[in-house]
Amino acid sequence: MFKHKLTISDYLLILVNLIPIYGVWMEGWDPKMIFIVYCLESVIIGLVNVLKMAIVTIFYKSKDEWSNNGVIKMVSGFFFIGFFIVHYGFFIFVQTQIFFGITGMSKSDDLLSSYSNLPALLGKEGKLLLAIFILYYTLQTFYSFFSTGQYKTTSLMKIMFEPYMRIFVQQFIVIIGSFFLIAGAGKMFILVFAFVKIFSEVYVNFNRFLNIAERKHWNMEEKKKD
Image (cartoon, rainbow, N blue to C red):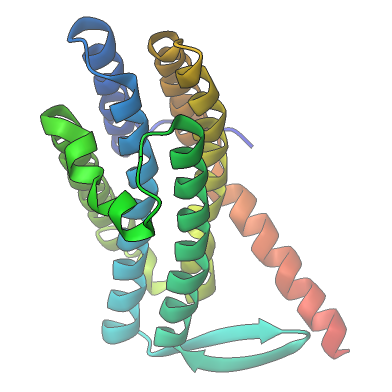
């Protein structure tokens, strides 16, 4: 289940995730600010995924198969997009609220105020790092999904679920890391966190896991029909 050969995209991801280590250890960046950026990285990945589904829906196939309790039917690609926004958005909302609650980084009880304060919490370095992540995921999507023609063969359901495995790993580490921030060990933990993140995203073959899960899902749906 591990990759045997790294791609250009993988090497770029390694480089991008080494930047926070350099910033915290060599430039004195606030570890809490780095963790906010990693939380927002989940949002970036979700938005990029919406863009991928929208382009596939508009320019390649307007409908795709959706299964529910053994019933398989063709639904609009915009249904996949809407479902993903609600489901993934709720997941991100819960995770960020847990993070804010544990670290105490947002002093306001108003939900909207908690998010409106993010630009101030990020600071100049955090905004720069966030821009780097946005640039990386934009280029990575073009390189690995569109330029290779992958968008022609990948189902909308698979595209919809692609971010979840990475985000589950990432957000779990972020929540655990927030306890280290409280204990004042943020500088050391950002080092461990970055290397765990690099290993999980670069060396673990999430696509293979997803392909296996997709095959099992459709096999189960076929058995239900029989």
